[in-house]
Length: 119
Image (cartoon, rainbow, N blue to C red; front, side, top):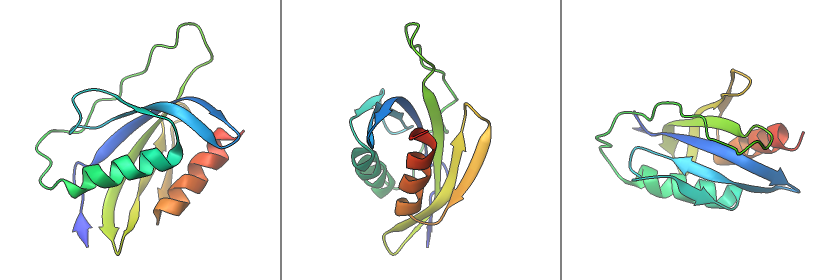
């Protein structure tokens, strides 16, 4: 098992319709925000960021996105605690509702996000 100490990302979801998410991801290894067009793109980006070892930067502070008068964006913190045999274990924090969920695989993370966003 490889612990992923400060490997935490902030995901802001601007829209979610019929399983298609649009938003952005912030991570200590990224210079700015990375635009996301799907949940699968989010998973692939997070996985490539975890491949980078010895993350030297502190976790990102929570930053609420401006939304130009639209409905409020959904904001999540994804903390990947361990990665073993190509699966993830970690915590999903839903910032808008101040709720936390534990996930035991990337698939479970996707299911949690879909259940929350498909409301």
